Amino acid sequence: HRFRLQLHLLINSCCYRSEGFRLSFRITANTNPYLTMSTMMQGPEFQHILRILNTNVEGKRNVVFALTKIRGLGPRFADLICKKAEIDVNKRAGELTADEIEKLVAIIQNPRQFKIPLWFLNRQKDFKTGKYSQVFAQNFDAKLRDDIERMKKIRAHRGLRHWWGVRVRGQHTCSTGRRRA
Image 1 (spheres, rainbow, N blue to C red):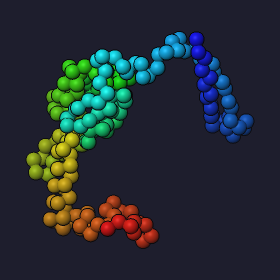
Image 2 (cartoon, rainbow, N blue to C red):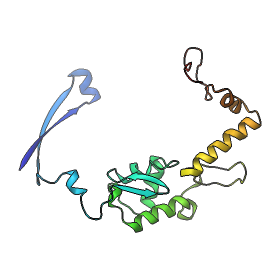
Image 3 (cartoon, rainbow, N blue to C red):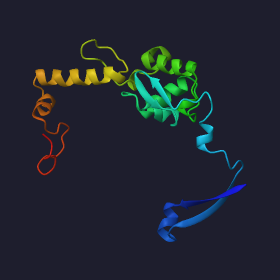
Image 4 (tube, helix red, strand yellow):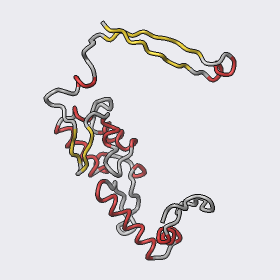
């Protein structure tokens, strides 16, 4: 067996003030020296790149963090949909079956049918329809562009700032942000 030496730096706030850093060494045994991440991901059913909602998702990453590559899905929403679909959050994205991917897509497209609360959705009370929805992928960019165009059209302060190409969210502009535009 191969032994790996793992160095753990343990910092406790009380220990840090009085004694300084405390170091501890732990030797752990790897039961199978040839079992590494690359051999785990060489199975016949493992997919290195998945195509979910017109987005390439990396198969080597954890399911929750791989789903965040889809525009409009953050880590908390991805974690929630994995729990609703009863998918292990420690699983790799490449290990997902076709049925699990279909479940995930169904939950993303219709979150209200799976009892996801309204406050969790990223498009609350749409300006035109007044409905709550989860906007993702290409729809996300289109909705954002429409919102900015609407603000410019009604000459709102945020719309004018976008129009002028200066900072929109209240940042200081006296000495920073000179390179843009």
